[in-house]
Amino acid sequence: MDTVANISENIARVEERIAAACRRSGRRREDVKLVAISKTRPAEAIRAAFAAGVRDFGENRVQEAQAKFPALADLRATWHLVGHLQSNKARIARETFHWVHSIDSLRLAEKLAQAGPPGGACLPVLIEVNLGEEAAKAGVRAAEVEELAAQVGRLATLELRGLMVIPPFLASPEEVRPYFRQLRDLAREIEARHLPNVSMQELSMGMSHDFEVAIEEGATLVRVGTAIFGERQSQ
Image 1 (cartoon, helix red, strand yellow):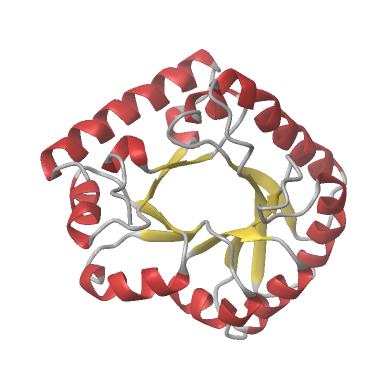
Image 2: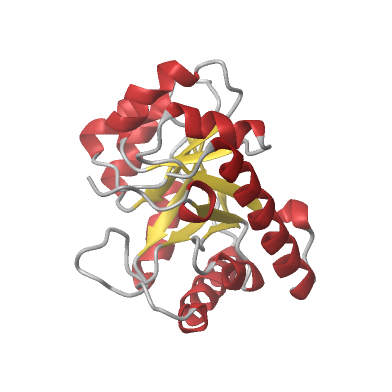
């Protein structure tokens, strides 16, 4: 893991790359949110990123987040669950996170909705799409997204904001571009349906090696870990 000083420098470089990608695509920098993927990272690394200006952090596992959050309780950060969520952990996730990027079934959405307090704030959620139809990855197929979006839109304590994708890992970011474009086009198609309580304004796509291409294709949330914190040590 990189040092505190390196984390600050890394964030500055990531910010420069985000700004450049926004300029190339005629977008405003404020329309793209940087989510620092802090899974497996210790509290001091997260604090260093917060001190450098990052306010949004992403975690993969509910249990890991629960374990580290007490040491970070004083930070006014927004926490995103970006990993697969089992429906039996929905209540804990609802209590722990401000966003969930990985809705992949009506059952999971219903569990999250039931865990919300009546009359309380809605939880922003995204539907995870498995565009590569990879058996090892979570997410719904593109053909199933519209139906699931309509169902999630009927759940009173959730606020469907858009879509998320983890495309197949390919060496060249340009090879990944078609997946980002496909997610953007899918979101536009669903938006045009004007489904009740369904928004497709947010696209969570792009990671350390390809986030610039994702921004050029319309990403509003980029999930960056290694480019901020350095390579993870093997477990």
